[in-house]
Image: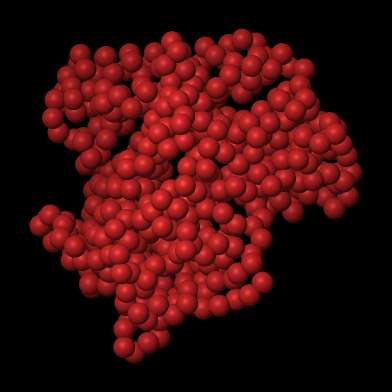
Length: 512
C-alpha cells in the first residue's frame, strides 16, 4: 500500500472521485467540453462501475430497472449488448455496459483504480488559492463496513464468515458452498432481498432477521403487471404528474392534482395512489409468513422504507412456504460459535451471517474538518455555531410554510402516518448537505471560487439520466460557461442560494 498527494496547482487539472454512473458521466462530459483537460478519475475498487463494479455483482443479481431506462442517453444498452430492452437485466450486464462505455469514450487511461482518496484539503500555494490537495492510498483492498458497530455483536468465537452485503460479489461462494447450510441475513431492503434470494436459490436455509425498530421492510413490487415491465409505466409522462414535484408548481396538472384547488383532482389522485398501495399490499396477504415482510407503512406514498422489485413469483412463494426462509422481526444481539442470538431470545443455527444494513454517507469525512462549514457539508449538530443554527431554523420555517401552501396534501397526512412517523422519528445527529442545486457549495460560489462540485447526492430512480444532467450542469459551472441570467445572478448571492437550499430541504422533510 502506498500513499501519495496530488497537488492540483495546475488550474486545468481535474480530479473526479468515483467511477460509478455519476463519475463516468462527469468524466465523459468534461472531456467533451474541454478535450485538453488533464483529468484523473480515482476509485478504490479494482474495476469501474461503483455499486455495479465487478466486485459487487454476483450470479443471479438482477437490477430493478431494465435496459430501456437504465442507460446513458447517447449509448443505448439494449443496442450495445443486444438485450431485450424491457427484459430482466442482470447486474453482470450492467457492469459490462459500463466497461464498454469507458472504452467507447476513451476514459480507461484516465481511471486510477485501486486508489482510495483519504483526505482533501486546500492547497497552500500562494499563487492560486482556489486549488486543492488530495491524499490517496494505492493498492487498496476494498472491505465493507457494517453501518453501526459490527463489533458490538460479532463474537470472536463465531466460526463462520460475517459479511456485509457490499462484499457479496467477492464472497458469495462462502454463502453457496457445501459447508454452508444455514445463513442469517439481517436487513429489510433490496440488498437483503437479493441476499436471501441468492442463498435460497442455492438450496440454503435462511433466517431473515428484520428489526422491529426503524422503518421496517421495504416494499416489494412485481417487476411486471399484465406483462408490462414496471419501467415502462415509470417511463410514461403520465406517471410523473401523479406525484408532487417542487420543480413543477404551475400548469394544469399541478393545479388539478396537487394545489388542493380541485376537489375532483384531489379525489382522483388519492384514489389512484390508494389503488397502487392496495395492489402492492395484496401480494403479502398469502399467509402469516408473507405478512411478516409486509411494509410497516402500508401507504406507499408516505413510506420511508425502500422499494424494490421481484422478478419471479417463486421468491414470494418460498417466503410463504416457510421451508427455506424463516422470518424474524427482531435484532441480532450476538453471534456465538455456531449460533445467532436474537433480541427476542431465540438462538438460531448459523453457518454464515450477512448484514444488509445500509451505509452512512461519508463524503464529508475526507475533507479537512475545518473546511466543512464553509463547504455546505454535514457537521455534528453540536458543532454547529449557534448563530448558524438560528439562521437556518428561520429559513427552514419560512420554506416549510411555503411548501405547505404549495402542496396541501403534505400538511395533513393520515393519522396512521402521523403515529408511524412519531414512533420512528429520530433527532438528526448532523446538519444536512447544504449545496445549491445539490451540487455547489454556496460560500465558494459567491466569492467566485468555482473549483469544487459534489455530484450524486440526489437519489432517484433515473440514475443514469440524472448523472448526465447534473454532470453537464456541474461542468458548466466549473468552466464558467453561461447559465440563464437568473441562475448566474443567484450564484453570486449567498442569501439567495441559501433560500433555494432551504426550500428543497423543507420539501424533502415534508415529502419523505
